[in-house]
Image (cartoon, rainbow, N blue to C red; front, side, top):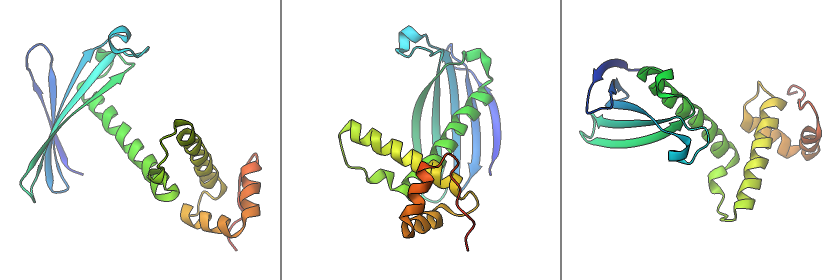
Length: 173
């Protein structure tokens, strides 16, 4: 983990908050700006704030800088959190998203869906979510790939898990 340095920056009427991070061979500066946004303006019923995160990431290896602007909407009002808390909320969202996406993609090949039919895609997503839930609860202390292989060798056990109210596999022999 890198060190973080925070500093208040003013610009126009919207206050920015800068975060300076140094880790993994790069130096990153992120500016967080939070401003009020009504549900009517945004088209989202519970929207109360627009969070804009601007980042500049300098790679020490390639000596190149990449810039990016991301926007998020929130049901929280701008004054309900400090700028540091807003930044932590955004980072927390992505850590959960990345962890969940990796499981779905690496274990269940979610990115290989090539259908453009929304109903097919939604159905496959629901089935994969249910399968992941069953896999994680059926054998919570075993690696998921091992559990998948085990169930592939015993399809009757897989069906019994799906139909069970409390999916659990017996410990490995």
